[in-house]
Length: 328
Image 1 (cartoon, rainbow, N blue to C red):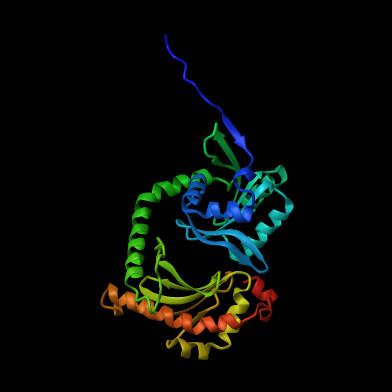
Image 2: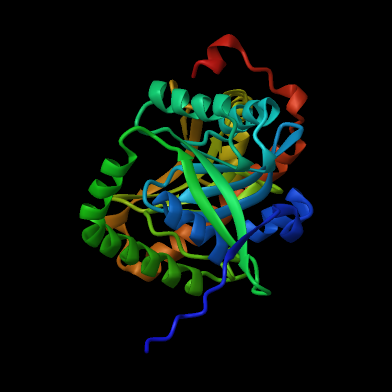
């Protein structure tokens, strides 16, 4: 006589039982590596945390992350209630201010008009821009711990096909990304702390590496390093105020070059929402990897020391967005 297995039932739990407050409870929970990894698996992305409660003008976006595969910025906005018009407007404002290529809207429940809005944004956007609607549910079995479940209710057109294409490329892509991660890990461990403090950094899986912020809590105005045929140490500016900030800094370019101790190339990058100011050297001019690391460390420190006090003194009221700047 066969026995009958004793089974229990999944019980749906209100989100507020686990996270009473979105900003104080849910956002810090989601920012943890394992939980952001769960969202990554659901979406088919490689999310790497960049900032929590990222300031956008007088507001704050919940989470700013980077897609480790594409290198693009990912905005994540949380809502532990049913979707509403206010959050839809906030999401679009934050995405523009952060120059995000991917937007993830997480909510307890998606109303039909907001699901349709996500579909519409995906329909009119280029393949480089992606919008996701993600419904969050919470379950438990008996007295077990709560178990979260992300469900994608709206996603980019042909997203499944894009995932298949990315999967086919993944072996060679993964190897290349690991090479970059190993390179930057060696750099982080060798850079003198008194020149460029880089302790406890996660090495990026690409040829670009952010090493310093020029304004506290603002990754949009930062010092980056770029490894290619020519090594670059650069100031990267992005967001809605990138052009006016670039123009204001360029008006003092001679003093900034003297402070940096190196000639600077000013690239306004018209028709893009970013700008770049860099110094560079031919990689072949340096004899080995340690020499590259020393050049990166010293140039990044020099640029940070030159630009940080100037950027810190600039008030946002000094930055006026002209019609020409808005379209650039």
